[in-house]
Length: 261
Image 1: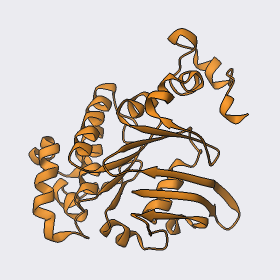
Image 2 (image 1 turned 135 degrees about the vertical axis):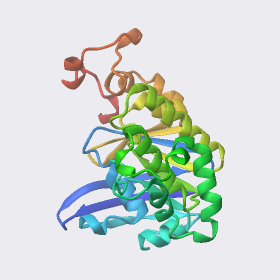
Image 3 (image 1 turned 120 degrees about the vertical axis):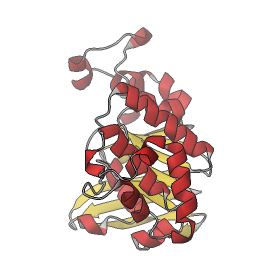
């Protein structure tokens, strides 16, 4: 179990970004974390993976545990060794290196199993095997997303943190990434999926959380979130009876937002 308990995060000693956030990712599960830009989703992933220092942030309250042992004080490489790997928003591949060299960088904490893990990645993403000697910067957006996910899998993680994997992709590719996440999970890797594409995320997650302004405002099984009127209106763009709402109506908050009361 990966657990975040009552965590607060401050940037530059003054900017409070996370305000008492608690969530759990069970073994073998997919958990969705939804929210608008600036809600604090990426900050939460940085806290889990130990990357806050890079951005002048720190955990000032609470704890993060893996199987009951605290990991919030560990270096990022040690967290990866323990089985938690993150795919950063925007892919962050090394464009001037080959596809295979990018993958091998992801194996730096688990070189003994690099051959086995690269075979797993190529099995999941045959296009990467076909283009393994190609310069990564010339891949399409969808292929670069696959490469970023594949690189994270090279450490053999038990928990995979995905930050907006569908960002900027065409609908057909979003469906492909969705199916790949399901396949990765079926192979035994738990997933914490941060997404603005709420329909995609909730369609594959067992449980979902909604974050606004650094706080979790909803915490329910995904099926319940999909059925919730407020979630439908604000995150799925639907009003009553399932009809589509205009962008103007949704973004001017013409909804009840019962969770804030």
